[in-house]
Length: 175
Image 1 (cartoon, rainbow, N blue to C red):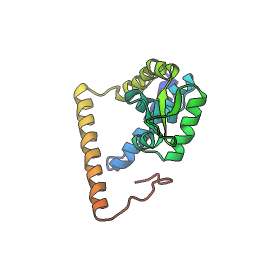
Image 2: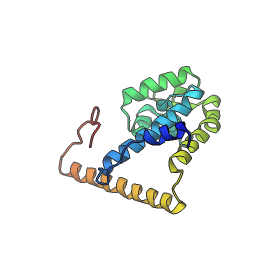
Image 3: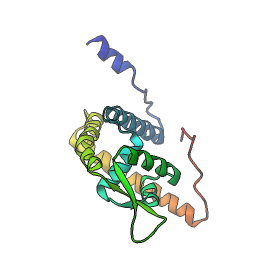
Image 4: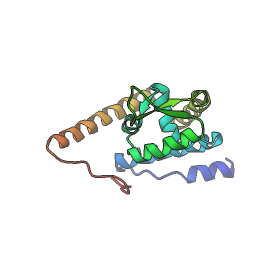
C-alpha cells in the first residue's frame, strides 16, 4: 500500500458504534457539499449558484420568493445570488404578468448550457460517495433517508400545530 493510500485511510472521520445518526448525516452532507464545490469551482460556479441553477433547470421563470422557498434560503440570500448570476450571464430577471414589483429569474442560453457541464460533476460526487456500497445497500440507504426526512417533516408540522416555532439553526453545528 502506498503512503498516499495509508494517509487517505488514516485521515477519515472515526465513527463510534454509538455515534448519533444526526452527526453522521451532517458529516455526509458536508462531504457531499465540499466534493461538489471542488468540482464546481473548475467552472467558476459557486455552490449557491448551483442550488439556484438546479431549481431553474426544473422550473424556469420563478420569482425570488419562490426560488428562496425551494432552496430553503432567505430572500436576501437569494437576491444576492441572483444579482451575481445575472452579472455572469446565467439568468435574466424580468417582470411578468404586468407585476412591476416582482421579478422572475429566467435562464439564459449560457445558464441552460451549464446543465450539460455541471450535472456530470454532481454525478461524479454521488458515484464517489457510493463507492463500495452494493446496489441493495444504495437502495436501502435511499429508502431509509426518505423515511427519515418524511418523519422529521411530520415532527416539524406537529410542533407547528402546537404553536412551537422552529428556532434558527445558524451556528448550530451539533445535534
